[in-house]
Length: 251
Image (cartoon, rainbow, N blue to C red):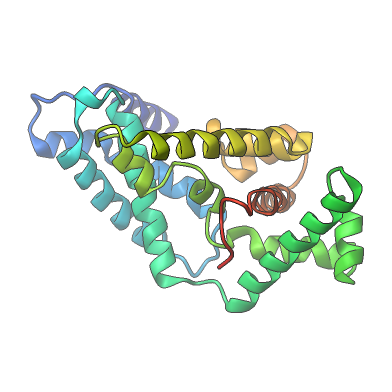
């Protein structure tokens, strides 16, 4: 696909939803957004996950978004659709649960080690310290991070509101004051945890989730390999999990 075509498609799905267009036209306008999100997520998934399956799931999310979007709730359609599309893809991945149990177990183990080191030292746990505590070489630890890069598949999104729950919140009435307070406290806690990440990990998270760059593009910016970016991202997610245990429970 040429750059001009890709740019034209991006321009189309960045335009506001025209409620006067017929349904098929609306689907056609935003279908490229489904592909973009699928390509973005695929960069952290193993070859066993089929891109076409993600796109199919994402199209279902898009159809649900078009059906349920309520402009009076204040969110733009693009924001709402991104959440529904991404949520549908995550549901598809979770349903098939491609990750072996050993991967889940190792990721939880690393999170526990990170938490113990940081509680003991009062600072960010370093790669060498984590590897030493795990009784593995630094190379083996980095390999473990690579394997765990999709643990719980995009755990960052699960910690954040960008899930089906977040999408539903955009079309539902304001909830009770206690629930609203808990949500605000959670978001504040997550924001603090992200802000407290080591600089390079925080930058990778920003470029991947906020700027929506893929791992190769991030690697070019940082001057490191795509696999190293994957490791940094995985370590950031695990560090966040270790710091948010009071909000989440282990698998």
